[in-house]
Image 1 (cartoon, rainbow, N blue to C red):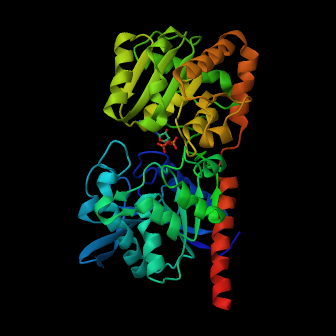
Image 2 (spheres, helix red, strand yellow; image 1 turned 135 degrees about the horizontal axis):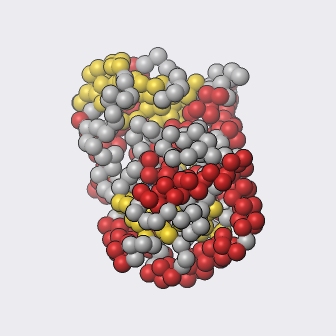
Image 3 (cartoon, rainbow, N blue to C red; image 1 turned 180 degrees about the vertical axis):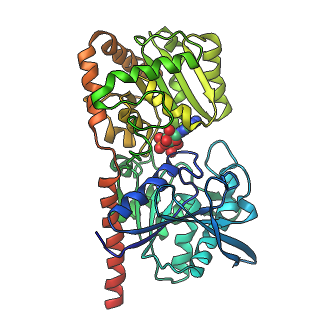
Length: 453
Ligand code: ADP
């Protein structure tokens, strides 16, 4: 399939080169699906200090490109196992070993870094032989590009994707809000699930930008994220002990007993293992996990890192109930996959959740999600494949998890059905990539109509 569309995706993160959360997964997976639709999709990110230069070999394609009195070097590599070009902008601002300065990943401490990244993207683009139809911008880190294109009178079209409205990139002394600029100055705006697209128009979820978003309601849509079904595949996953699929689901329990041993617990495939992999920040609702949860007949394995108060609260539970709670404070891709493969139940109690990938990954691994009904969680989890609660309280969460455990222990057939319906669901990017394609085409059309008039 060929359609001559050229898309440049600009972002702060990219799986597997430099990942903090779901943004990286989207930027790493969407272009693969676009290429399958015949699009020439390319990616541009900062050359972060944490990117492994030996693993991801890159070549210098242009040095000393001028950006506002400074210079950057432009490197190029490929997205692993594809031919998709990845451009890496090298500058001392990006040399640090962390993508964001603060645990919150709101990046407010990184304003300087990303307001520099935006003009650098445009400067680099002028030096390469690639003229995109659309620059696809992601979150506030790249929002200033939309402002520059609009005020500079450039003909480039922009799509701005909101991955998380809570992180806005506010420059107080200049009275700038980069998220708001992205929303106002891009040609089209979307967010990562249909429900979140509606929620953000309200005061409750709009994070103070609801009025601006309502202004752009006609240009705003919601496209559900997919997951990389090759990277997250229990039948081939290089990180897990025992491969399995819909046809060999019984083998999943080997991963549970392996993880139990790894955590210093006795091997017992009958005990329900409840997993959670997330950033430990306010959004994720981990504060709903209280001491009362120790009364439940199950084991908990939590993996994440973030704000100290949430980390400490969970670590305290592990200290008090070491045979029931295990808490690992770190970013660990391998352990994350091991948890998806080993767990029977997976928790996502978010206060708000633009899309959420972990519930989809969990379902792909036959782990039944227990989630709060909000944003993308509401678009992906229902009675057939998991458990949901609406009111954001510890008691509601506790109640629904108890119900899930009751079915796990007492109704094995119903439990098997829940697992199977998650496992059989198509979470690949194919469908969503087609929706992005529609937006890109719409943008290209705007250009053609303008040129014609
Ligand atoms: P968000 O983008 O808000 O962080 P998502 O659910 O959209 O949340 O995506 C989270 C992604 O990051 C998933 O791929 C998840 O497995 C991964 N992840 C989160 N925390 C960790 C961690 N501590 N170690 C490994 N992977 C993690």
